[in-house]
Image 1 (spheres, rainbow, N blue to C red):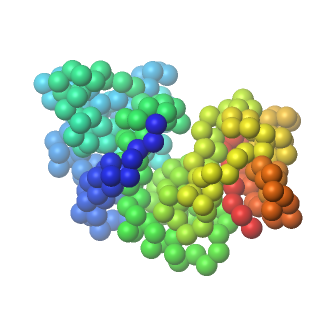
Image 2 (cartoon, helix red, strand yellow; image 1 turned 180 degrees about the vertical axis):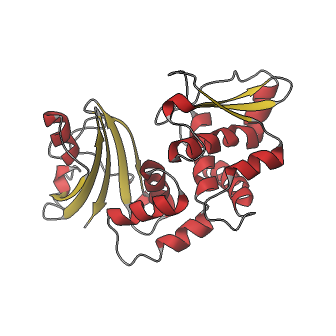
Length: 264
């Protein structure tokens, strides 16, 4: 289920109001928590969750350091911003307080099909990379390649994944972000210009001629960019793009691959 435009605008306005209260490019999450008197506890919770917001005569956030959710890490910052989403979005907070919504564990790169998780992720993106500030930085790059995402992720102290998704939403060049595990697409996120393109080998299948597919076949590979043909990733029944080129950036890790795809 997708977030409707009216709802997205409400969440965006709320998150960016909080972020733009500060002049710092890197949104100071610790200051927001302190201002709200919202306790954040960092501890080892094994493999249970990345973060969770609970209510017990007051709200608390628990962050799992065992999975890398520490204050200085990109993963921890996104997880905390995500939990802020559950706290600041009125119906999330009220439902949790009244017991209509059970405390639930948030998992990085998971649960993206649940609407409340999508809303909290969107809130986190807007909080960490407010559109007014982020788009201005995007416009400073004359051409797009992977270095744009790499540079912006460092400037905003967010992960490559979070930055690429935000760039797909508000950046200056259409891109597609695809997350895969065990040679299967778990989710993808595209700029508006690419949203309705069909993948070459089916909705959930890693395209056979993609760099990601090569990695899953061999089990080895490094982060790299390669120029491919349009039809290596996308289906085109009218053959309009047979001679068009695209680029794919792969970031592999064990049985997982993040691919960023864009037109040449």
